[in-house]
View (tube, rainbow, N blue to C red):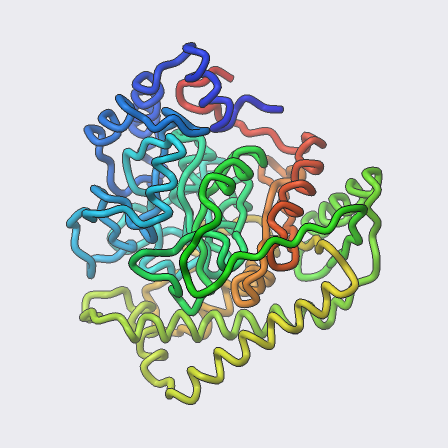
Length: 448
């Protein structure tokens, strides 16, 4: 197991080889060294150092971290959602999730770049900075948790907070060679400010360098969510029936999907036929519903959008045209997507799919200066055709790298039934042991 992850850094701190303050100083130095990546939008060295002086005794005690500029909130850190419309005033109280991050021992020292209101699969807000992929700086790091993914991939931090309403944990993780889990609906707390954000399609957790880090942060944050969606546990024992979808991506990405499924067979799991037509239909419907829900949410915000980016204004205007009957229909259609995905899972226990259709595109591939909102959503769907399916259905999904092509990761996506996070993590751990991807950057403070 690699030591180049947050668990490895926590182990170095526990053993006394590194103090929490030394780890924080190393992270701050790395943040300055990698400033050209545009991963960090707000840095508070004083708060980071104060946190490192007295970290909670959790599994990541003393490990520096960054939090996305969208979600939380984390007390003391402004959540501006990549927009000039929101104030710079820091929050005064932690969300339930933020409190669990701190209880896990994580020491926050800044916020990471996100597109305005999370409305893109690239993290290039007009207010700046432009976030670049540390593996290839002319390419996107993904969105909307691109800043977090870039910071982890570059080794500024070993783990970072992220959110996912339409692939926003998984797409940046896939672009940057990381592990990203979108937890199932109800698994992770979303309060106390809200418990049903974006109609329940959004979830929060982290981008990580390893499956063991993902499992550890999920264990530290899950349960007792006190929201409208009760958590579900669903983990039948025995060999898994693996459904395989080899569509929606270019040849290198399709090849690793089949490789990943085959790599599970020696462990007793078997590949079985899947109703790919039903799965793809549910994915297309999910993309449509995601676009509508995001637009409605923007229209409901009590903000003056005159200074927003043009694409944000276009999305808000689209949401404002929707009627009450139309919104009600969306909730019904969401339930039907979940039903249809459950029917696919009548015949399989785990589905392996592409995460992205292509390699990460160049910076500027998701422009927000225009107002053609339908074309914008279509570009995002073309890049990550299966991303929104897990959000609309509420099912958990995970991405991890399973190979490399010209120095860039070849990611796969695993989808499990509701409550199947442990199943995803177990399968992902088996794939990770194949050692088909290596992180090119060492973690700050942790020798390679």
